[in-house]
Length: 413
Image (cartoon, rainbow, N blue to C red; front, side):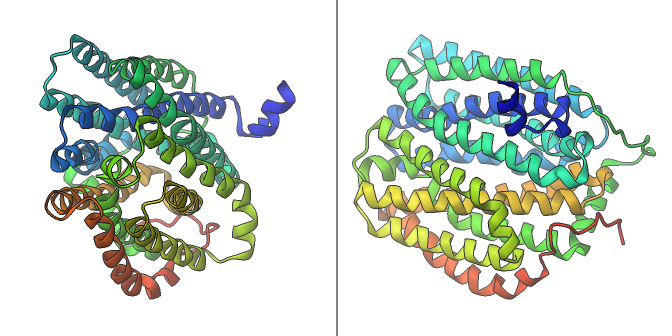
């Protein structure tokens, strides 16, 4: 058994990384359960496409609103303690949601509010978790550590979690949220065991505004990270529109039930696992700039294929390929950022990236809800294809700025 653990999580990564990995997997399993159960709950309460899209928007809006203060906070306080506190707060919100849904008389507005509150706590956890890794793992092991974390993400968050969440939903609409609350609480316990081997020296007192300005200024002057932030923002304007109504697309366009909808994330996760196994070989043969270009082409064509098909088999094949792309893109982007950004700026630069990520998703989800409401459930996918094609042409030459993942951390200019 120990040899299997050593193969999956090499001993050189340290015991603290194993605790962090366990915390990540527990939390991600809970989030994967909610990934299917949340939209299913809202869709069971209303058939209004705009309200269903709001379920995605209220979970994407908190990172846009709170990522910057979360980044400043994670650069100022004990990061491990911050993760424990927000996990416990998130578990408490989920317990309240579970009890409310179990009562059988909860309005959809309360559900949306609870999803917003849980997502708000998750902003602080996710931002802080990304900053912990460079403090407990050697720089040369960051890529390996990120692959292990993202392998857990695609396995438990997308492969296991969604179908489990859909199944638990059939047992009772409150059941998946109770399960998520328990998993998040256990996640708080495991992350409390992490020991930070390296700590930055005390930072001089400064204002929040100057801290934020420092993070934005660093991103602006670093070509690779700047291009990655710009790319994720623009492409999420289109991706968010399509995925915000995915539950309606699955049920109305593909004719899938709750469990079938849960399998969409599972199939994407299977593609992510293939991306995990092939990532090392791919990056040894393909430059990061070319790798990102191919990924953006795949994402653009994904929207068109889904807009045109009514076949679940074809759609699942598309979701599988998209899963490969999503994993490769996510690993590359995160590793480049972690290696390039100074330790003292990890939280704020990660926050700037989150603002770009979720700013695009929030705007896109609003557009997607309106398009689906007035033009049908496939309209957001056609919009996503057309918009992605335009962004692809505009961003294509800029991807040459993406530095190799071995780039050293750069100080402020």
